[in-house]
Image (cartoon, rainbow, N blue to C red; front, side):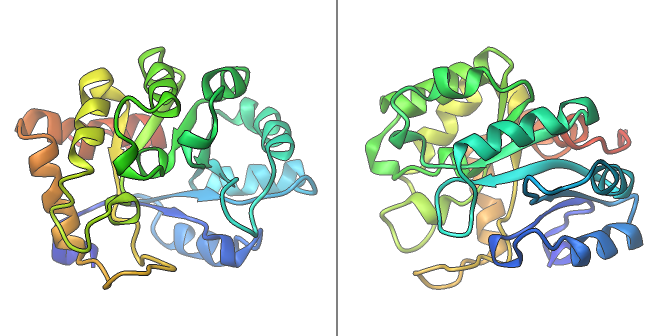
Length: 234
C-alpha cells in the first residue's frame, strides 16, 4: 500500500484489538529499522526492560485509547506518561476533544509531548469554534502537542471524499501550528462503518488542506522526522 501511494517511511500504531501484546509490531520494526517507527500500547505492569527494548526497536510513543472499550483511563494514561518521560516518548491520545471542556487544563500537566489522533476525533459538524478543539489548538500553539491530520472519514458527515466539512478543521490546525502536524493513512481502517476508504484519495486530501508544496513537505517529511526520530532525509 505504501509503495502504491509513494510513501517511503511509516509509523505503526498498535491497535486496541491487540491489547498490550506488541510482539508483532516489534518483529516488523526489527525487520525495517530505517523505514519504520512504532507507537505501542502498554499498561501499568510494563517493566523498564520492556520499555527499553521497545525503544531500541524504534518505538517512540505510547497510545492511550480513552474513547473506546479496550482502552485505558485518564489516571493510567497520566501514570504511563510519567514512565515514558525519560525515554523522550510522546503520548498519543485517542479522544474526542469536544468531550473535554477543560482539555487544556487536563492535559497540560502531562510531562510529555501529546499527539492528538484524527484532528481531535470530534464530529466535524461541531466546527472550529468548539471549545475542546480550541483547547487542542492552544496546546499546539504552546508547543505542548502535535496532531495527526488523519481519519477524516471518521469525523465527517459525508460518505465519500473530499469530506469538505473536515477541511476547516485541518486548515485551522495548519494555520496555528504547521510545524506540529503530521499526516497518516489510518490504514487498514479498522471498524469503519462506511465504504472502505481508498488511501490514495486520503492522501490527495492533503493537497487541498495544504496547497503549498513546502508546507506539504513539512507535514510529510520534516515534522515526522522530528516527532518520530527518523534520520533526516535531505
